[in-house]
Image (cartoon, rainbow, N blue to C red; front, side):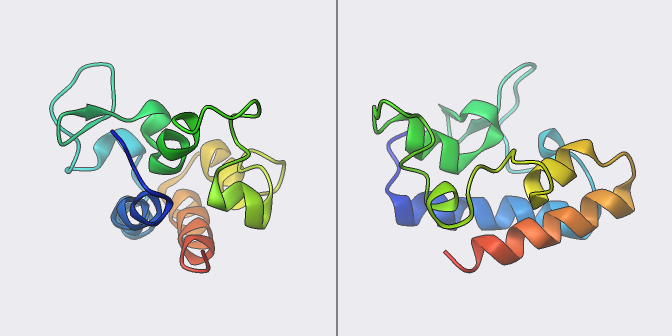
Length: 110
């Protein structure tokens, strides 16, 4: 999927709104197309289920995360203590809701 930076951010927000409201996992988002082992959105494979990663990986930069608008503003999403990292480590729906909302708040600043 060829995404602009603006569209990558825009497409990310409904996913993270869903996650913040439900505490579910990315694969539970009802907007994904039917697939057993990939995140498919409107017929296109989205690596890691992340529109920002899809945007960044298609920029062919020597550092894959460098083009990511999240990375440029907040640093690596998997940095210890970052909302996304905390979300990946959360073991309860309440924890996932909390960290998904924190990540969504950051997305809204981009």
